[in-house]
Length: 529
Image (tube, rainbow, N blue to C red; front, side, top):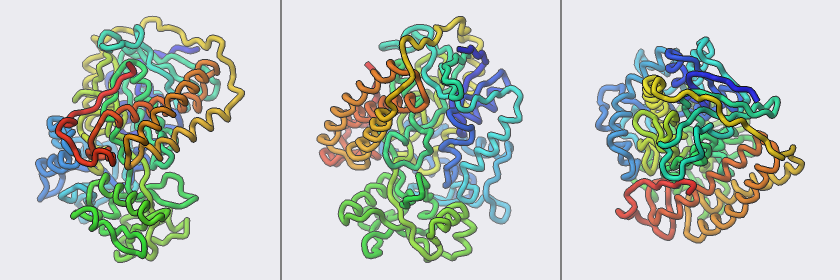
């Protein structure tokens, strides 16, 4: 086992992690730990854009009101205010770092998405995340103070003492254990400040728009260290993922509906008017439930998003990535409706962090989708996620830079030991449990829930989790085993959170309690004890 010492450790290489690394590199040496190659992230797949007030006729109050309305009463108004008000500065910073947003006649070409009352979505055609990732990655790779460790899987946080049962503040985060995929060895990465920017956990569900890396590693590590996970029942299902056997996890951006796309069901009938006065521009929770309802009502495999009434030249220019991908699969979006289904997309909950990204564990910061900041509440407003990532990357980097002199040096951590663990000889068990968890979560803890479904999921997950824990300690760690351990951990947390909320609010809809209740107008917090 090797020991690597840095001033800062960043786990994850999406927008939040890369922007934080760039800023931290001005005050110290930074290690960026990334499970695959650095460009693989949710950020890289983000199509729609980043929301910010930049145009005449728009203002902070309107953006704040849209965010609070979509959050269904659980967004923190103070956090919403600071994120929206700091958005223009973060946009200017991204541009200064080389991000090229789409322009029209010298001004930003702004998109409209569900839940927004104004056009305020900056985008780079329909590959905004890829463009932001490109600019930030180029910046970070050129910085001599940043060292990338690709194909290293974070295993657990290194703590000064045992995981705190009630008060993590009595403990200290000293670093991260990480598995080097090439050798199978677990190494210690030590630093006074660790930034979790490891993204979400879409792979907990069978159908997701997320890449394969999104197994909730940072959330699970924090949970095992004694930190609380907040609002984990609020999983956003993107309404429109491409339905095609050769199109794994390909998103059809909400921006298509913003430009006039119509959702059609059986017989080509438009159905959103039956579910919301906002029709296709309703918030994502409403649109996803509407599609789910239509599929169950008709028995169809998918619904269709119809863009054919728009000009072909406009569609090819505005959505070049989606146009090209669909065309390769035999779908010409200028003439053919696009087959779509909902898929798990974004976690509104995560590791509780404050307005500076600090967690309850000294030395540990959480930003991006891994964190619960209070911005999203019970449902995320479209294109607020990249914004949140950038705002809290900035704030956490500033805080970590200020905090570092007062944080204890790592000293000599406990060495990673394998005990009597041996190489796995039953990989089929991992594959079986992986498939069972994701299918169980999709069927019982998905878009529409019930007490009976959640109880069944809870009982089955208890058995599966016990199997996985035993397997984990019996065999040497691999990336697949670590990911399985983490999705099992988070599946259990999501189920516990969902069972505790006896109402329907935002993304959590249960047939047993179909209306919101003032009794539950508060975040849900779950810890391992």
